[in-house]
Length: 110
Length: 115
Image (cartoon, rainbow over all chains, first blue to last red):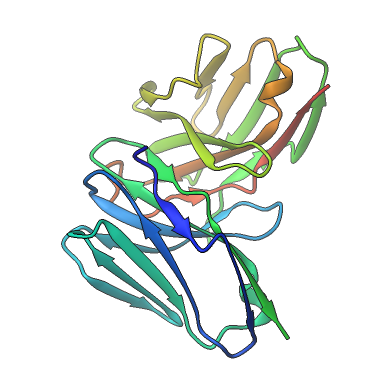
């Protein structure tokens, strides 16, 4: 499969803690994107990291990319209840489509 | 902030009926996409559309599916004869760059239920 695969499948943390999720893929990428989906809602683009980048930050989000290991990680620092959602990585190769992984469901307990 | 708008939010249809899902992409975007998500499963690519033609389509996007940009603002997905397995959330997306320089903007989705 060319799709990204996230782990863990589910994560439950206390508010204020950090949440880390990982994504692995099998083929070369142009970029890798992370999206959030609240229950029953659309996909919200969080951050994009290009294949020649190793780390990127956006607010409380930090994404790393290791192309030698074909993996990426998303770190959410100082989590809030509003961060409760499913998080998906999506791989973009040199075509027009995104290939999504199965997602990590994050629950932030107050 | 600009949004991708999808209508209806929920549609129930009888098996064998035709449905049209509608999307209004962001006005200055040039690339348009449909994805679907069967309940509990991954988001799957259906089709991409640029310059009034299909750029790429997946194996899911068979002859029962078609897309159209009938005017300057709407982008539609038609399923000609729906099957039970077409029940899913359908997401429209648009982007201003087709080769992945930026993320896509997704709509909130249309939940299609085929009975």
